Length: 104
Image 1 (cartoon, one colour):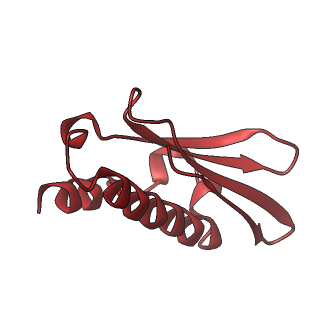
Image 2 (tube, one colour):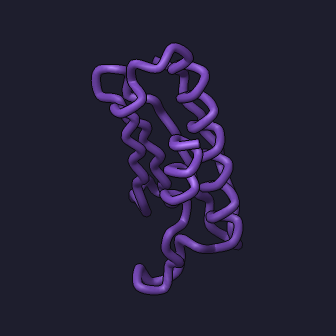
Image 3 (cartoon, rainbow, N blue to C red):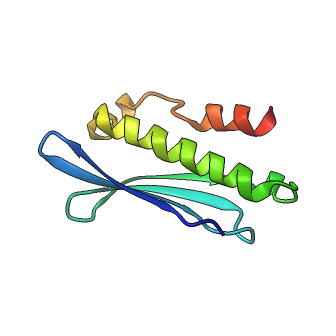
């Protein structure tokens, strides 16, 4: 399991905490959670990597995915994306990008 990433991001007068963690090979998933000031969860992103869990370089691939997802989430928060109503959030955000990354 890889150590996670934690970042505080300000948007206007709000502070968001972004946390990205690898849940380990057994779970084969990466969770990124966006918390708003006060601890309320704004959004959770889940990346499953079970299909690549036998990869020889799994740790490096998972680390790169974690960094990419974490940085993408920081950019989304800085743009105010997670303050929009759910039906206004552009889709897809990163899931297609991740799938392209995993299948290339």
